[in-house]
Each structure stands twice: as C-alpha cells, then as structure tokens.
Length: 295
Image (spheres, rainbow, N blue to C red):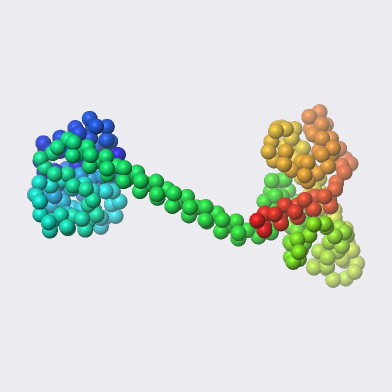
C-alpha cells in the first residue's frame, strides 16, 4: 500500500512512518505538516491511503478531505485524533472516513487498523476487477450477437487470405442469400441455380444473366484456388499451424493441398491444374456461418 501522512506533530509522523515500514505494511510516498500544504502533493502522488490528523493549524483534517474529494481524489482516509468529539467524529464519517487511529500513537492499534484498511481496499479492488470483467464479457456477448452473416463470412475469408479477391464478394452474397431462408439448409441447391439467382439481382436480360453466371463461377473458382495456395503456403511453413490444421481438411481436397505444398517445398511453380470443389467449400462455409450466427 502507498501512504501519505498529514500531521502537524513531527514525532507522530515519524512514529507512523516507522510502524508502516517495520510492519511491512507499505511505503510512505509523502508527508505534510498541515492540511493546506498537503492537498497538492497528495493529488500528485496518488496514495492509496492518507493518514490525516483531525485537528491541525491553518486547515483541519475534515476541510482537507473535503478539498481532496472535490478535486476527484479516489484514495482512502484514516483519521488520527486525540479528541473524542461526537460531532466531529460524525462529520468525519460523512466524509467517508471509516477508520480512526487514536493519539497517543500505539503500534498495535496502528498495525491492526492499517491491516484492516488494506484488506478492505484489496477486497474493493477485487470486486471492481470482477465487475469490469463482467461488463467486458457482456459487451463481447452483445457484439457477438450483433455480428451479421457478412461479418462472419468475411472473418473466415480473411483467415484464408482472400478478402481482397473479387470472388469473395460473390461468396459473401451467396451465403447471405442462403441464410435469408427460414430453414437452415443442410444441402446446397445446384450451384448453377445459385449463380443464376445471384446474377439476376444485377442483370436483366437472359444473355446478360448467362454471361454473369459464368463470370461468377470463374471469380469464385479463382478465389478458392488462391485460398488453397495460401493454406498450402501456411502448411509448408508450419505444418502444425492451427489455421492450417483447421481449414485444410475441411474446406479443400487435402490431396490438392499436398500437391501445392510439395511444389512450394521443391521451389517449383504451383500446379496449373488444381481440383477445386466449389460446392464443398460453400457447403462448409454455410454450415460454419450458421453455427456462429445462431449460437
């Protein structure tokens, strides 16, 4: 703990400092002989506890505490007093002073009081940490619930390194199209039907729809091939990579990934003809997206 001592009696300050150090209760970050000169150094040093005399010249302890509170000081106070005055004690309690040390200074009393205050302080800190953690968890849960299908698909495509590919937009559009249905699909409809439905959203003549259908297929194929290359590079560099172990066998034909990895390891060009299973890729992507979206 970090302590600041405010007392006009230098002997009391020395005794309190010695007790704190000898009892291994914490460190002394500052001292002051009156309340008026104590405010600025307390605000600068940010002690956990201020041990402050009730009656001092120039400015008493209660007025000093009030000034520190108004300056947004968040530390705690332990009042030092040899005066037993119910009104003053009541006023001190109103300033959130929870503990008192009586004069003349007694080592056993000081040690017991400061240990109790430290325990209470640590308990409050623990509860605050738990509260912040719960708020953070709740915030993450809300953010997770607010994720769209597009967010989820783009996150996966980002892992595969193809967010920048033009085919990634077609992939996102297809998954969004499929998840708009009331029932979660377990099997994809024919790919040609998907491409045509997607093409018809932007094209209006039969010829244009046919051309766009072929273009969509080509863009998606190129994007998946790029994803295969990226995963193969990942596996060639680190076969135990979590991303490689997860994506390689699920989204792709693993034999094709192995061919790409061998080409990389042998420092040869990637195979020109790679078997691309678009339906498998989209099927796995759809299932994973639904799992994350509806969980």
